[in-house]
Amino acid sequence: MTVDPKSLERLLARAESVLARLESHLPPRNADVDWKALAFRWKRRNGAGALHAVKHPHVIRFDDLHDIDDQKARLDANTRHFVKGLPANNVLLTGARGTGKSSLVKAALQKYAKHGLRLIEVDRVDLVDLPEIVDLIAQRPERFIVFSDDLSFEASDPGYKALKSVLDGGVAALTENVLIYATSNRRHLMPEHMAENLAAKHTGEGEIHPEETTEEKVSLSERFGLWLSFYPFDQDQYLRIAAHWSGELSGTSVDIANIRKDALLWALERGSRSGRIAWQFARHWAAEHAASRKP
Image (cartoon, rainbow, N blue to C red; front, side, top):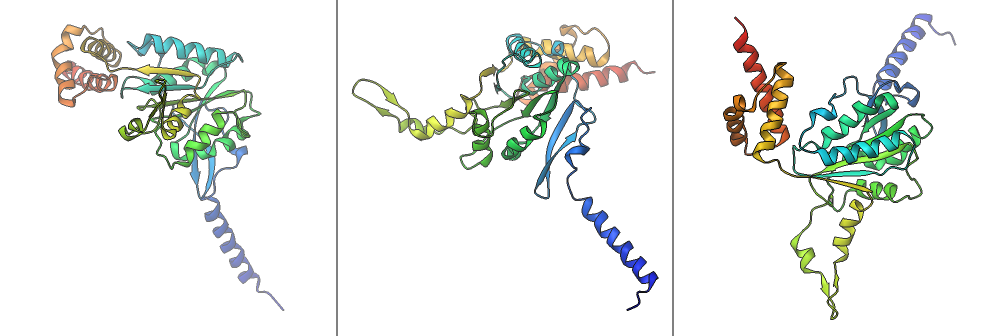
């Protein structure tokens, strides 16, 4: 049977085109990871996960974070121990929204990146891939923080048991070059219902035995060795943060008295005095300030 060379050439071209389209939907191979990057995201595509380098990580300094000095000092010390190869704890940062929880983790990366610290951001739904992530980076010389932001579980979430197993030192445990830092608005990472408290059992000796459901919810947060709690800012704290960021963004020295009225109105309109609201006000104020100075 004779094959027409032109037909064969067209067939090969079509096959190459199909393969190229298929490869575009496949995750990158582990060998393709840009290990020079400082931060990564774990992304799933077509049923497989892979590390993707973050080209422009959010840069923030410890000095930019105000009125959380105790939390800052404790996270700084834990991270410093970790990059030095000393014993360190997994960290759970919980509390009011917009108070600097995730910013504190990013500031730790900025400070210790030159000492080999790297950050891997993992969404809650992808925590089932933790054993795979740990295996991928186990032999790397860098020190990795696996970071999950705004963490919260429902009872049926598969990521809950995966995280619990890794933190508890299960068959697939963390290696010595990996820690988990997580933020949450919930202290115990899961919703708590009044009915669970009502189901607590009281013995004749006055002992209280919580319902098993409640104990299960508490058990995950207890596996984090270090807890850092964050609280809502009062008015003076909010104004100090707003003045700091207004000065940083405008390149000028900003006195609280000069922004007080506008900053308080900004917070009142949004119903919050968080650090995030202060940052948003500062961006607005700095832009207005710059525009007013232009001829």
